[in-house]
Length: 554
Image (cartoon, rainbow, N blue to C red; front, top):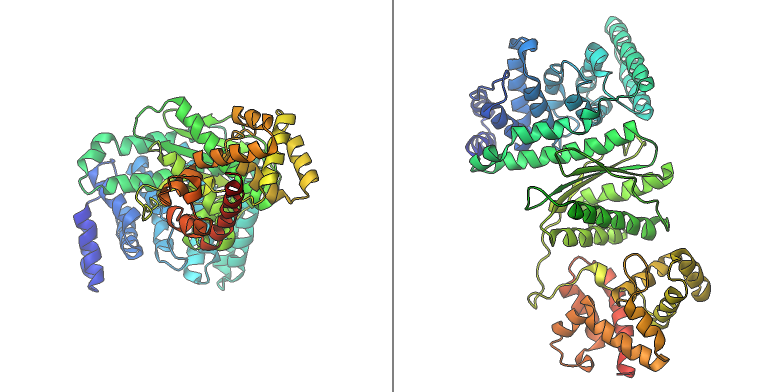
């Protein structure tokens, strides 16, 4: 398929759109059975440029008009539609927003689990079309909802989604000049909202919605099919659709669940059958990521734990939920959504969220895991959100000194070493009460919530607490020493830490006294490229402060 994809794009690059259209038309898509011709066409829809997409949907639309819709295969329509919706870059004025109507009109029953699951993505697509200033696009979208609304209304939605749909459709309807057409569309739209409202009272209950699409995708792209595709395009299409499914599952949890933050996670690894311990470890890492973002960005000091996961049968996909207020859910979802945007990732104000995600990705990749993560809330803007993936984060380049690298997660930002000792003492005094440790630390040191989080992280880096905020054996040993000995003990702990040993090796030192405190900034810039420059300078200040104290007692 790489040949066809390349040839079509070459025609377009040379300005020969007729040649491109002719090449696409040569693909005889079998609409009655899912075979190689359908997979090849889906590749063009998913991976081609927007112009390729527009040509393909135009050709497909003309082909669908000729066919008896009753004979068009559901699985074929699902794959073609999922391929289009898996794209994230279709502009609001693209002609594909008109030509897609021929495809979505072929869906015979939107209550079928495979199509119901795609409805959040299609709703999101149609909302953009309704909002478009180009009246041809917005009115054709309105015509679809009016004409096929009785069927499309059966897909599950939230009340907030319907409210937004109603506002958008009314806005387009008000601008229609032809009164007869306006009246006809008004009647069809009324039917859509009447049925959709009734669906709200009878919640969607077919439990196959969680698994049917995943099972179908695995059947379409079986290992034999993927291995036979030398161009590896099938794998890319499958991966894009997996990400779409993950986003749709999160949205579906919002539709069928309660208010709060819905989370969908898909895990892929080198082994076909991952042990449950690996899945549980991934969930722990992601729960920790969400907690870090909440801690540092919104001062939500203790999130409720993820609800018992709903595992999707036959797949390493899990749907979770966190019981939060609407405001907290939206704040967290917005922060996680921003990780999908390259521009947001370059934003210094977003650096903590980005660093936390990069560190989480690095830990997951240590086990060769690929993870997709999607979130959803009841807010119309955050109801359907593009998933983020560990594959979005490129491998961090090695530093100049080969194999010396640290994660931002392992670099402290807590200048005052005496506060680290205070924290350790509180851990010993209240070993099972993290909330009391927090309260006492804030009272004693007069610090902000964010500073508390930095010092909590510092004691973890030095091996004095585990990630559950429990004191370690090392912490109990430290507590038995006198003040002078405590500093020396911490110096050894620092050298043993990931950041301390990395600095030691980077400086090619034989003794702690060989490390130059003023080299801290350059060290971090070289071995921790995930840190923004300003953040690196702030954390270098901590390293320099600690080292100066250690050297006084060395």
